[in-house]
Structures are given as structure tokens and as C-alpha cells.
Image (cartoon, rainbow, N blue to C red; front, side, top):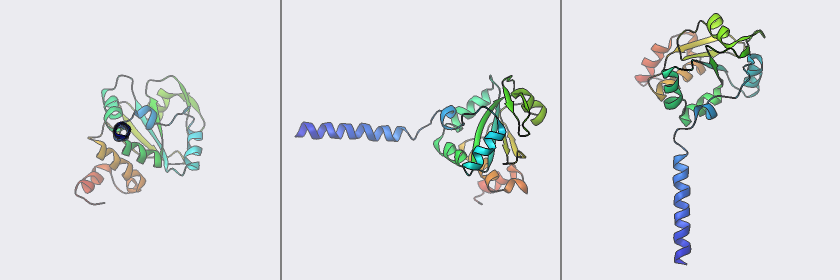
Length: 179
């Protein structure tokens, strides 16, 4: 009986350690971004169906160290993944990409044209938030300082505070403990 109970304790310990480990960082490509053919009208329809507030596009470049930093350190965190997936359809777009995509007006073009010509993206990463009509709500250029700041960016958009203020002022308020 002692062998059986020791074995059970060992198995339960492994299970508990596995459960704790699962709360650590998770691959951003799998757990943050949604799979997409970058047909933005279809993405809007999905966001509406899922009760989300809009579309967030992360504009990236292949060799961008700040994009890699965001994916590895911020977008890989389960609280970030859960919050953003609840509120937004999450897409990634290559600013140098020739892969075709369809914009909010149903016009097909290469990703790089949508990034540069339609959204003036030159540096990466850029996080652009669009409402369910395809209107740009706000954008943030660069990597955030940490996970908390990126969550504040999401809150800034979902709360509607982007309509009356800027993110820098919102960060100051949040850092001072104001909701």
C-alpha cells in the first residue's frame, strides 16, 4: 500500500507542476494572434459575432528586434492573451509583405501597401486599433515598457478613453492609481 500511495503522490506532484508551468509564457503566434487570411471585412464579421470591440493589427517587419521582444516578453503572457482575445480580433501584418490582403473597403492589395500607403507605417511594431466599421481608433508605435503597459493600452481602447485623451496621459493616471 505504501508503494501505491507514494506513486500517487508522485503523479499528483507532476500534475501540479505541469499546471503551474502552464501559467507561464505561451507562444504568441498560437495563443495571441488569430489565424487569418487578412480579409478585413471577414475579420470584422467574426469580431461582431464574437462580441469583440474591434480589430487590432500588429504591423511587423521580419528583422524587427522590438517586434520579437514584444512577442517573447509581452504577447506571450496569458493575462495579455486572454484580455486582448476577449476584446479584439488580433492580426499581424508584414509591412514588407507581398501577400495579398483585403482592406476594410473590400479592395485587395499587398500587405505592404496597406501598411505604408493606407496606414503610414514606417517603423515597427505598430499596434493599430480599428473599430467594427474599419475606422482607426488609435495606434501605438514601438514596444511597450512591460506587460502592464500593454494591458493599459488595451484598456485605453476598450474604455473609450481614446476618444477624449491620449495614451500618455492615460498611463500617468493608471500609474498614479486612478482607474
